[in-house]
Length: 368
Image (tube, rainbow, N blue to C red; front, side, top):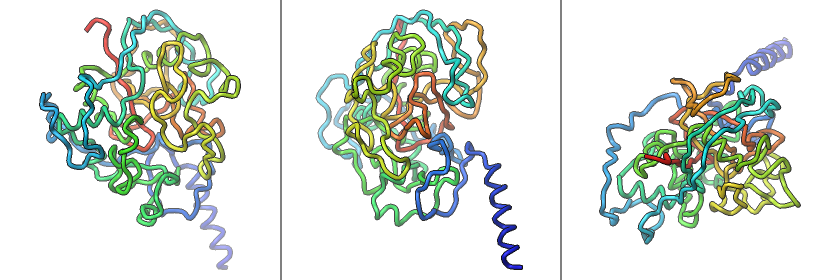
């Protein structure tokens, strides 16, 4: 009788699991191992269930006093450059083919391929770094959403044993992700971590709203998905990656990705098990770095998987939605489970999401 009852319980749980939506965050008791049973990294499911209004505490007043300093920042000296913002690269726009008719992940809305025309625009040559975000936070007093929530999502493989011992919950659909108290842009792997020796790495744990705030301070904006994809392609037509169709031309790594068995072992064959300093890998044909790999990048667009095949001019995505589009993949991506480091690939998160592999870069209009 007991055996029959146990079998019924197991069957019920299997049926329940089969209907679990990976897009909804569900926390469960922390498992004993990181065995992967899915083909997805799960980072698009790192969604918060409550909202925080950032408008009251974050008054983005521009201050000229560069001596303002955050007591909890990791680095004491300020940069000496008159402008710490990333160098902008002018792209001429024009017609290009967006998306693909041969999607690697069809459910992500990578297709159909369609003709898009863009006006000229400037884009930052690399992702916004910790140093640049620190200057912004110091001058404005801005508090990120992760800091206000008090936690952010971190890949367990990066956590110290001390922090791991404090965890009680994980994301049900992706147990290698956990909400870690004290994790934020200054403490990427929790309270016992620091960015002191990573000032030239991409800033992480920034929500869409945080990225918007930085762009406002820098007098720039987030790219549309179309702008981002044009920039990623580097002038090449209908290619998988910013440099072509071969992942490792002549055996050389062109992006910071995962090598090994996810999520248990990253061989770091490319030199990095975590983020890498910006500009560590070759630039694409437009002179842009890390368009794929390293850190996911927010775009301005709301998420949709339905696209018209008609020609479009400066498309900006749907007028509303629940998730924002992110592009480029991260250091956690591998073809066997998260093949999203292609120019046509895409994913999404709620605007208040933040994680240890999510960053951004800004763009600017050619004629402000």
